Length: 193
Image (cartoon, rainbow, N blue to C red; front, side, top):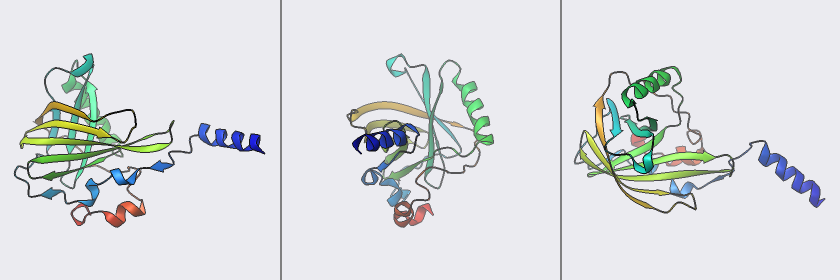
């Protein structure tokens, strides 16, 4: 009987049925207003792109796209010709707009982002929280990063993102795994509906 249980458990794990565990207590941006006493707004008609030298000899430059309704899209593009890579990503996004979107909120002069993800090998969902300072409507500095992943300690950062306007940003169709969850919709702040 014990062998059957082990074989059944292994079969379930290997066929990709996870993730099974969700750390909902770490998801909190969706419960709060998108804008809470904002001293500075952020632009939503373009893309914020990582500036300066890249960490760890990275070949990728990070970017952020914000939408007025509290959703955002985070990603990376090839650093060598990042403007061309970003243009190609936007064209792809127009064709396949069902990306995993994340959530943000602006409080006073701070920006908070919950980045959601899942690790199908470990069968749980995780969240990475970013704390940022809104330096102006066109410049953001990421100052701290924390995650629910056990082996990743909180990081103090200083990564500046600069805004580049774009008329090419398509509408989004959020299909993130949490969109239809009862706990999410029950606690979703009115400003996000």
